[in-house]
Length: 111
Image (cartoon, rainbow, N blue to C red; front, top):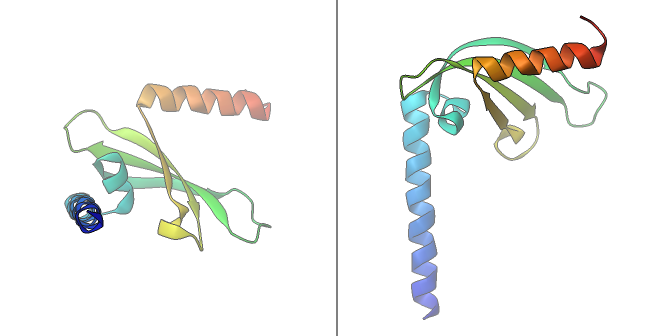
């Protein structure tokens, strides 16, 4: 019984691994694989906390979805020295990106 459970989980992990590699090859990047699109361009990066032991930064990218919809803005939180680069990707529509930019301007006190 335990052997069947082990085989089941090995098959599940193998299928997930193959799907992940397929998405990576199809999109050409880890970010593209996570959000389902091809990175058109990197808009910019900024350091979050340069004094921290593990450096962290934000990267903003314009991504074209594989589904053919309008391009989306992806904000990545990247960390060095962690599993998979510590990548967290936030997928935003252009409207959501504009709202986020307005919120950040308001929070920083500039309008």
